[in-house]
Amino acid sequence: MSARTVIVTDPPRADADVARRLGEHGTATVHEALGRAGFLGPAIRPAWPGARVGGTAVTALCWPGDNLMIHAAVEQCGDGDILVVATSSPSQDGLFGELFATALATRGVRGVVLACGVRDVAELRTMGFPAWSSAVSAQGSVKETAGHVNLPVVIGGQLITPGDVIVADDDGVVCVPRERSTEALTAAEARAAKEEATRAAFRGGELGLDRYGLRAKLRELGVAYVKHEDLP
Ligand SMILES: O=C([O-])CC(=O)C(=O)O
Ligand SMILES: [Mg+2]
Image 1: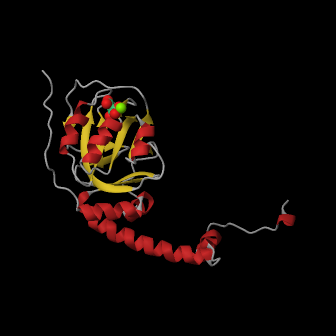
Image 2: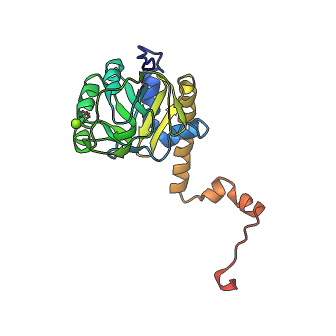
Image 3: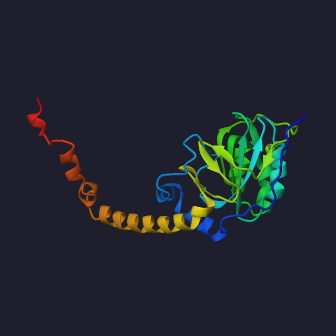
């Protein structure tokens, strides 16, 4: 007897505009704004460089080498969403490619994040459809095994609940819990303003050692300045 599997329809989603604006701030800023949380880890990489998106998560749990539940998830995806695919055990097979991307783009979906492989990378780049994955692989899939759509999944140790905000760019992928998305946006805006002031100061020649009061820290740590000629 097979285990009971479910497709959850229409979960509550974070505000679409908040998700989009978090996306504009990018992963490093949003990760810091969350208190250095939510990063899916360096193993999830963009299929092509330069994309930056923010959207609301629709999740799918697939079996390795089987993309049946991605087909089921596409129907649950809409404008402003990002499809997030996990597998029930580690897999690098290319579960997703340009045909899926075409279907998702038609529905207004902003991108895909896969804890497995992606393929058709050249076509994805030409289409401008953003994709992040743990592998690039031509290995094809079957459509045989039931999984879940829109239940929480874990990728890189991060819990992703449907409706959370996903932010992704060249630095990787960050998940912002739906309940924290407004607070995260406020913190990201504050951080961006602070970094703008720091950028201006650095352009003016100020040093981080002075701006951040780090000379005292070096002293506290016992770090001494020694002239090269005085080195033993
Ligand atoms: O069809 C598949 O199995 C995945 C793929 O290559 C596509 O979406 O284009
Ligand atoms: Mg294909």
